[in-house]
Amino acid sequence: MVFGTEPQRKSRRFVDLERDLIREAVRDLEDIQARKTNGTVRPGPAADVAKSVIHRLGRDLDHKGKHGTPAALSRAELIAGNGWIPEAIHILNTMIGGTR
Image 1 (cartoon, one colour):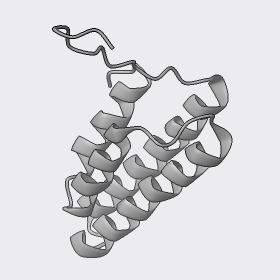
Image 2 (cartoon, helix red, strand yellow):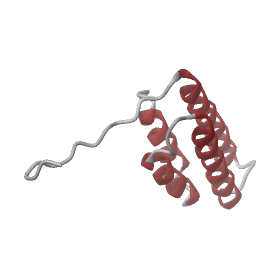
Image 3 (cartoon, helix red, strand yellow):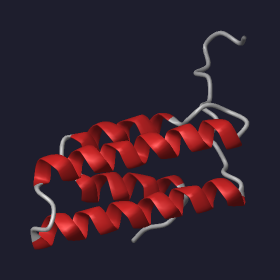
């Protein structure tokens, strides 16, 4: 370790399979948000379902990838659990480099 320099954080690059898993989770979250908006699902259960979708994504990434789940994923899970599903979608999109 070199003293006096701040260690650089390595950004994680996703393989195609991992990107597909993230895109699938984004589609699921967009569907949940649409149902929440049109009143089919109440906000509380929608947040619970969104949180479980992101939790499942983290488990899948941990099993299929070489590393543990990224920190941004736990942040997205926390935000979705509070009911802010569009913000969680944005976090997942930035993880794979998409900006929708």
